Each structure stands twice: as C-alpha cells, then as structure tokens.
Image (cartoon, rainbow, N blue to C red; front, side, top):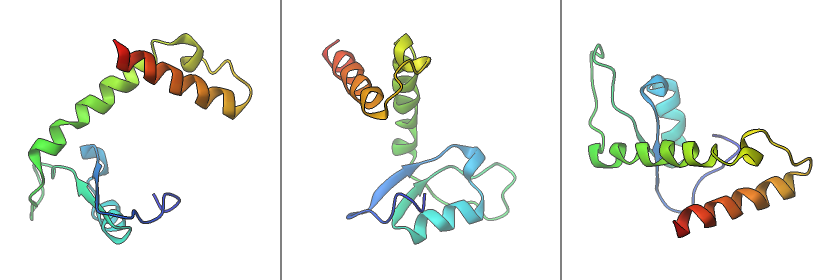
Length: 98
C-alpha cells in the first residue's frame, strides 16, 4: 500500500476480513485511504464501516473472475508488460460492451 502513495482525495479501500488487523487498518488511514472492512465477530472493540460500500467488494471479485476467462490473461502468454496491460484493457472493454 505504501507504493501506491497518498491519494489526491479520500478513497475507500475495500478489504477482506483477513486484513482487518489494527496495523493494516492504521496503515490505510495513515496513507489517506478510508478502510472498509468489517470487524471479526470476536473483536472486543468493533468499529463501524460502510456496509453498502463493502457489498461492492463482490463486484471487484466478479470482475477478476471474468478476466480469468480470457486464457491469455490467466496464463500470462505475453512476455512484455506493455502487451499484457494492453490485453487487460482490451478485455475490460469487451467486458464493458457485453
């Protein structure tokens, strides 16, 4: 997350429950992100989070599943990063037109 740097405006960072640790959440806050992660059920001091925003995490996971349907992306045939990113852009355009 540190390599991403601070965002220009507050951005929500959708995270899985596996990353709900205090250190990870604090790092996200320090970098200017708004962590959206539900606390585990055994937390002594649970926090509030944007439940509607967390439901959108599923959309991201479904997008990755659809991208894996393109064999060229899944198996990384391209040797150059530029070509790999170009095909990801192409796949996203095709997915958006469906």
